[in-house]
Image 1 (spheres, rainbow, N blue to C red):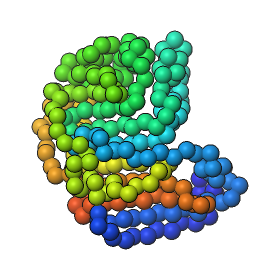
Image 2 (cartoon, rainbow, N blue to C red):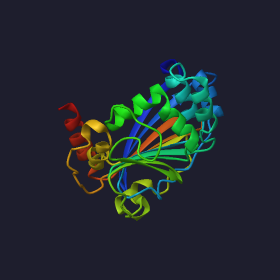
Image 3 (cartoon, one colour):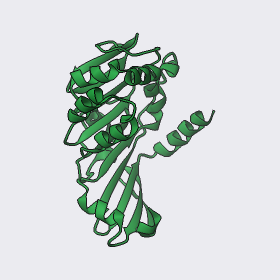
Image 4 (cartoon, one colour):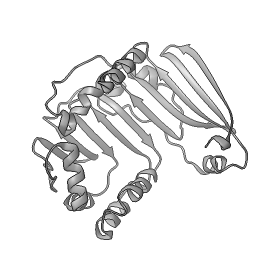
Length: 252
């Protein structure tokens, strides 16, 4: 990557939402990175309809999930399992989110039959089971005890009972960091204060008590500007202390 970059420039400024950190990498013309950027597609953020308790969200154009699946699981899954899952991966933009409740959501998602086939495989069942805290996950609406699988406008793994609440578009601190985001190569939303509760979806942390906290989010946008790759981070005033607190928990 470094030979493809001619220089880096960082800026820091303030606006109505908080602090804005920008990192601009000038890309060398004719380099592999320049070629990849020329072919890359952009996507709008569209995080507003996610639940208000969203802790982590990533949105990208189609293709990345399919490539990641083939790279990670390609040698561990038979073609009869991998092909239906790969073929039914969303072709357009997709969003992966994790939030308080806790829950994990992928939208749009592969077909239910393809997901069940993956969970029924030795590799898929062991992988999902290890993440959710059971010896082996099984296909169906309850892959592990205490964990529900919902299919509808995407795929949702949920521990506990679903609760209807606000959306991110109703959370003032979230709207401040998300407002005005352009179409870009990728978008991310992180609320460090909500991450510990969201991670209770994972088996080893399932019994940890919930720790409600006020959202203190930051939003990341990776975009192309002329001959440069730009990462822009918008943060509410409380985001940096919350991020340091999360890092401290992770180091314990």
